[in-house]
Image (cartoon, rainbow, N blue to C red; front, top):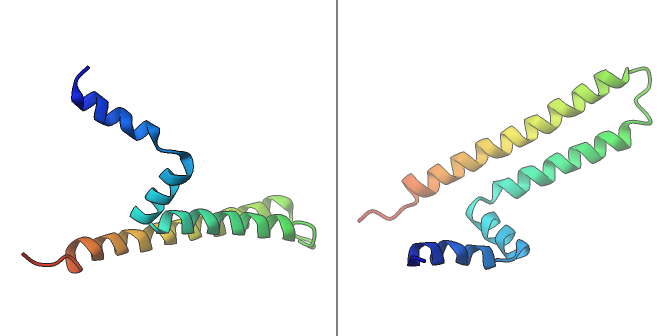
Length: 93
């Protein structure tokens, strides 16, 4: 085998926890988006009992829009953060 294949196989030795931590350091807004999505879904399930006269489909649509909005917001902030790091915070040679 070539050494290039050996180098790419070494990434498979990384555990799930260490891979998640490494990815979270590279892109910090991804775990924030995932946590926000999970929190909104949990809140929607909690509020499902006390939705009053609202139809189930309307309640689910509102929860979906809220969760997607949070994820899109986190992605937008993440892109802005990465652009800032790459273009403005980078030291000039």
